[in-house]
Image 1 (cartoon, rainbow, N blue to C red):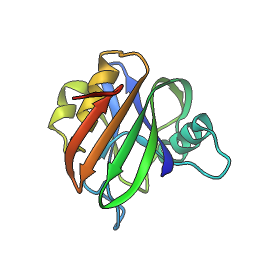
Image 2: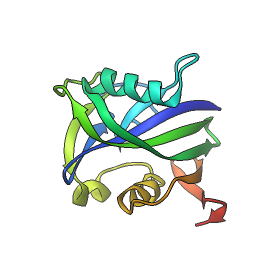
Image 3: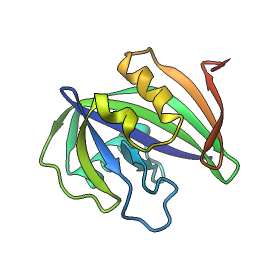
Image 4: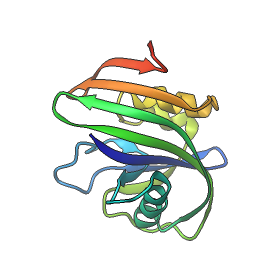
Length: 154
């Protein structure tokens, strides 16, 4: 299992989304996700969050919160523990990302964007300001086959 971070940066009613279209072999190809990535050796979740935010966006996060841990299991790739963050404070100027196209998207339009099926579950939890949660998402390829929130099947 690998460790990753994912962050949804908000600006009012808009969310910074990354349309993953630039990497050839990308499990997230053509999907819209938040920003983040894999831990480097001896890196904490916060250090990974801040590094990935800077590398992918050019922004320095000034206010963020860890909202939950999502366990991704997939019969076609390595599992992942993802530390899920939201951020509403940042400094700097948005830059071009080498992994995809960054775009501010109104929250009302997020559901219409192509993304992983389970992302809707944790995005809804973020928007509802749910307390810290544990979510397990089990996939068979691109298909969500099981979701468990705080020990309860959804």
